Image (cartoon, rainbow, N blue to C red; front, side, top):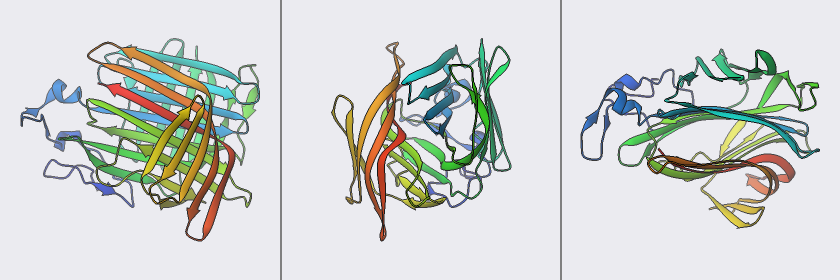
Length: 330
């Protein structure tokens, strides 16, 4: 299946298998007043990004490449929960120079480069390859295996004339290594988890969302993954889901509530999910250029609570995760 149909419009809904291609040349983008946009005017409306999180023992690693047309953005961090210390880098390339985000679902190759760092992301045959280098020296090398885990793959209408496609996976096996802040080489092992988030589309020109992601082993040694979002992908279903040993279970609509300081609560419309979130270190950006801008917060979080799935109760007790709040005008 090509995401874009022959009539110029996307397929909508959740998909049991990943689309083979995303062919933007087929998509006809119109303004709210019916004008068809082509060329650079169409491209300026198109946004795409890739994010990866790796949870290894008490380390959380996050990295991303984003192409928002007027700028390319890359970031990379390693957070040590035991020491409460972070190694962090981020950069912006004007007009997305030295930035490639390949949105094809099955085979893709992306990179972001700005001295002294480069991020390379490749995907082929169900394996995601990630390298982060500084002055040519490898700081992170990861092979992430997607087989055996159901993908979240969905597309929903956005605004009056746009769409958003997202593809997410959690609790993925990971091999490789990274260099911590002290210069030691840390090897990934069989308990290391990775999660992937690939998103693209013609998003609202002014938008905001909340998002939570979590991977952990429960007391019965089950692989538990969680993806929750509010504010995006809600016009034809939602992207909320729970993974148990690689099997995806849809969840109902979610409400994020900030209770003050470092405390959040999250609950579902059907009352089967109730979570308490304590936030710590925050990756923060605040850019206001009037016509465009972004305020981005991604917190390291500890998550507790319960999720009822059929006759099974999933218990979270201070599990590591990410909580995100993002406002964008682009």
